[in-house]
Amino acid sequence: MSFVSLGLIDPLVRTLDALGYVTPTPVQAQAIPAVLAKRDVMAAAQTGTGKTAGFALPLLQRLTMEGPQVASNAVRVLVLVPTRELAEQVHESFKTYGAGLPLRTFVAYGGVSINPQMMKLRKGLDVLVATPGRLLDLYRQNAVKFDQLQTLVLDEADRMLDLGFSRELDAVFAALPPKRQTLLFSATFSDEIRAMAGKLLVDPLSIEVSPRNSTVQRIRQWVVTVDKKRKPELFLHLLNKKRWSQVLVFVKTRKGVDLLVDTLAANGVAADAIHGDKPQPARLRALERFKAGQCKILVATDVAARGLDIDDLPLVVNFDLPIVAEDYIHRTGRTGRAGNAGEAVSLVCADEVDLLAAIELLTRQTLPRSEEPGFVPEHRVPLTDTAGQVIKKPKKPKKPKAVGEVSNVDVRFLKVR
Ligand code: AMP
Image: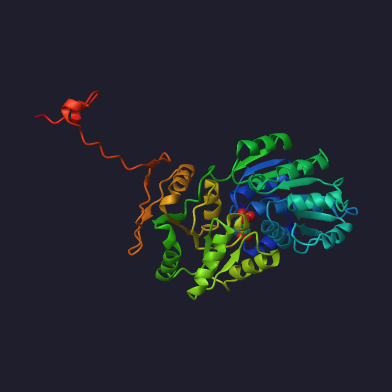
């Protein structure tokens, strides 16, 4: 199958050629014709499946074919995303795929001044990529109008709900024209997402490109058990021993991210950090440096790293296991992309056994464990079973009491005198 056979026009096909995209990914093969035909789409697709091109290419094509006709402050395609990083990234994709097309695109998110964004919106836009909160601010200040809106894209809808954007989303939906195309992309489909889809989508094409709640099979996943306090030391040890070349490291909290970066620095290892406390320019700079290979270790929290598009990432390290098991899938999805092999290593301490069990239940696998010589934990991590249960060590049977003292005694415990 080729991009031409999906109905894409020449300029887009030439751009894809130049990018080295030869074959459409499964989500693209299904989404592109449907979006071109103005159908609603509901897609279970995570980052790494090529979903962004799956909606960006056909939307760019339709906007181009319809010609420039956007009024002041109007927006023709609105893409809502959960984080600033994803907003930048999706916008970058629109710019890349739409290179040479006569279209105006822009990205707007919070944490930066709103005035330049209002100025940019004045002439109207063909595509606006935005986070829900900032979009509402712009709307309430009359900087954006939706009368010309044709298509709403919800990218990583599950994450938007996880981050508490539900009320903002409802306010945005209420402001949009009811007659429009809606495309909903989500890595997971909770009841809440299904309810949202039921409310927003009309006769949608359902696309499911990888089995629900599964990690990519190509990825070699393993666990190293270790005592909590020795995790930084173990990380440094594995980094040297295994000669890791480029690592994305996930840490549970912002404080934990900074602590690890400082510990690494104290040991002569340079690492960059991204988390919500960092100013936006610093986060983007860190990401660019990591992508360009200028810094080989990037330490991140889940929220900051969600949706990061980093090609050919060989390794993800879970320094801490995520609190929400589904984040394990998102984290692991950073590696093993576009047919490459990947590896995901989790450093797990005894406190985290319940989190490990939840991940194993969700991904329907028992992660292989190993112990690193010199780092064998004093606090053993209890075993887990395939049903996601922690196997507690069986209690030793109590010493049988003397015959005369007992009532209701299991006879198996009685010594025969
Ligand atoms: P996404 O799932 O949209 O984040 O895309 C994941 C990565 O796959 C991005 O780096 C894209 O540039 C790349 N990609 C998307 N579609 C294709 C394709 N058809 N062939 C090769 N690479 C692709």
